[in-house]
Every structure is written in C-alpha cells, then in structure tokens.
Amino acid sequence: MKDIAWSKILSVGVDEIDDDHRRLIAIFNELNQAVSRGASADYRAATLDELLKCTAWHFSHEERLMLKYGYPARAAHKAAHDELIEAAQALQTKLAQADQTVANDEIVFLDRWLTEHILTIDQHLGSFLAQAA
Image (cartoon, rainbow, N blue to C red; front, side, top):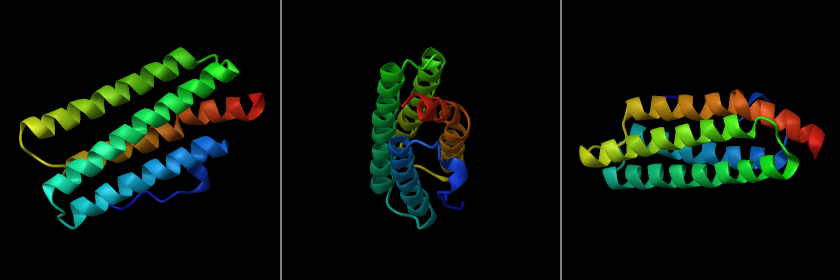
C-alpha cells in the first residue's frame, strides 16, 4: 500500500491541528513501511502502539480546542473520536490475543480510519476554528 502523502486537501486550515495530523501520518507511514519490508512483529506492534497513543493525545488536543472555542458539534465529534479509539484498541487487542502482527488488512483499515476522519469531521472543525480563533 502507498504511504499517505500530506497535501492541501488534508489541511484543516488550523496549523496546530495540521501539525498533529502530519505527525500521525508520519507514524502511519512508518508502520506501513514496516509492514512492507517485513519488519519484526515487535517493531510493528510498537509502532502501532505509538500511533494509537499519539492519536489519543491528538483527539484530546482537538477536544480541548472545541471546549475553548465553544464548538457546537463537540459532542458528535467527541463520539466519533471515542468510536475510533475503541475500534483501534480492539484491533490492537485482537492482534495481541491471536499472537499476530500488523499486516496489510490492518494498514488498509488504519489508512481509511485516519484519512476519512481528517477529510470529514476534522474539516468541519477546522472551518469553525478558523473563524472563531
């Protein structure tokens, strides 16, 4: 699978959120490359763990900004965050319990998970914050 390339289409127009997204994409790309080159299971698991921890931090960061600026769709956006974190943690648990590692199917899931979130509800948040800040 190809790496995710940062482009203007992924920008939400808020530098601090875009910086977070660039970091998440960089970690995703590292995981994608690790799968492609057959890196060790431990390395893939550690990279997935880093991606999930950074994602949780990023979601907390967005939620703080939503509170600070009174984002009207905060509850729905937070619910989407919670759902994504739950799905990613379930994936991580499933892999650990089955003594499996991240493979192409999980990369496809994570790619879709990351890009769709940025391209949909994060775009709405970015538009709101660009006007509110």
